[in-house]
Image (cartoon, rainbow over all chains, first blue to last red; front, side, top):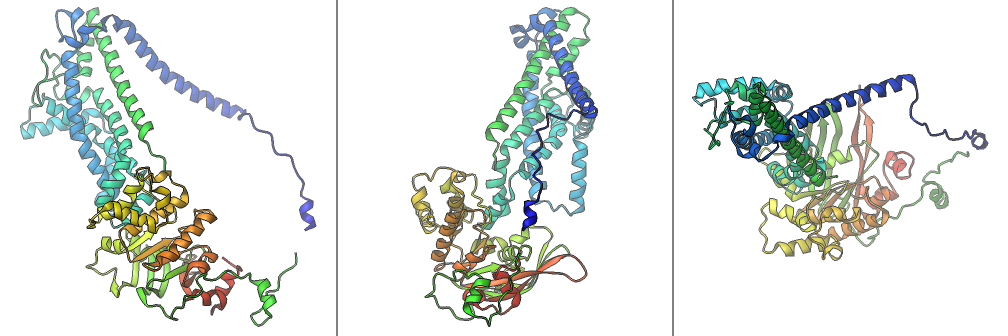
Length: 298
Length: 296
């Protein structure tokens, strides 16, 4: 017992004011620089676009069609409506399919089966496939089933394919975040696995799925490549009026205007860029609000 | 440090008292039970595997009608694993496999034509950590009857009955629409018991139901278990020997043995008897060592 009293009582160490070694300072410097650089790029783009385009942020931008002869009053009406229609169709196609696939893979698929392993690996790879490839795929499929390439439906299919892997992965992650105790509690009360998914896991995962889906859709909104490959129309002076209507979307409209040499076209292009960035920010903000408000803390 | 010399059973009562502090045994002392249970469920030669790992070896015992059976033993002895194989909750773990026979009213619950959903409806389960659903108190209790399509004349009455039986009604009757997650830990666990009672199971499995609760909440759950015993057969896994001694009619002591040829430990049943016998005159030395606090 006496030995206990002999333990030297060293004072508690003083709080460390961060790590001051040269290595960690350099590392912090690199981190700060990368953040600074990316924010700088975005800032430059925004400021540039704003100075070029603020004179054209007027009613004409929203209400009028594009024009080849009167760039001063040209608007993006057809592109705004086209974007809206295509994005809504993309959501209608991609979200139910993606959520269903995610639910199956997370809750019902036996991970030991070889075909589920293959799906698993491919899904991650698909999320990294360049957007234009989905355009080519859709063009090929459209050709073989006799669907015109230049219509809203074809564009929506290409964008839905593009964001499908993202939605599947988001769904799986949101489902996985629901604690095992909830599933077990439900099953122990005699609920079937399907009832458990439908009444417990999926409702709890909805905020996560909604957040992921909105962010995926905002990516689709800014995408031009697959639609250009499908032969998306660059000059449209009518409202899209259905799934088989010709259309243009904001990124394509901007692309078209930027090509023109006149200053007035550059200005309206900049105004449209501001509009699109505003929309993207809005969608992402909605996603963040949903996440913060409905996210469950178990 | 003076080293204790443990007295043997033949020593005087005073010495005995010093070596192994007595635990209060079965507060319901008037209850007389037959030496062998009239079983509602029986295990015969049950092995439970996770992949190649054998977690439980060769367990054979019967769980009595309207009795509380406690499964005790040190960590890793397979008590919870065995409990989860009694209502096929182990089915949810892909690699888990049960060998031997587990019967309920003499019928194998692992039979080819037996629906695991039906097994879990008849043999309810309360978990270690209170797990109310993120729904209202009312919906938590009504969930089981709804999903199982129970024919009820009045869901309100059923909810009240289940909450009353689980000694929670007076505390929550004015806030049935509030979230079940807003209750205290002990109330949440009683809500989980109410939820289980609502589907009218015959057996209730409890997996360390008080390990996340304070002593007062624990005591309420123990009282509740004794009240429920008249209508249900209860099987409880507990780390708390005093708890087993207080509530259980019969106690099964498990231990873990290193399996031959590998470092894996596998659980086995050492002794199963009336609780009064297990805690006063255990037949096996390992049981005695465990209940007197010498290991585990």
